Length: 74
Image (cartoon, rainbow, N blue to C red; front, side):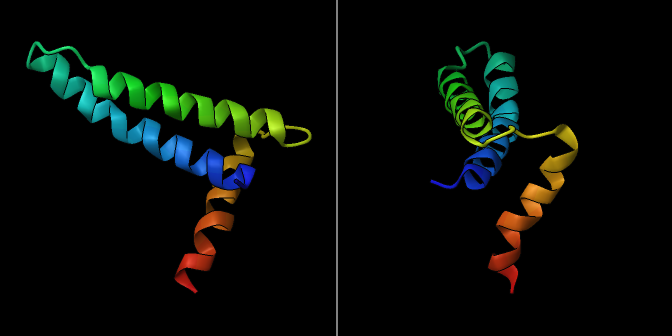
């Protein structure tokens, strides 16, 4: 898997798991699925950062999103 793709998927999963976690906590349920999703997203982000030579800078993340999503919209 491309490190850029892993970073984008990890960030999207992390963002999408926040509402699931809030929903579970507000219903007084254990947020098991959301917690597993956060762990998977974190692992993908860490893998992407450690496998790319030089890592990623925070300012570089929007450019990574564009590089990954641009071929889908051409």
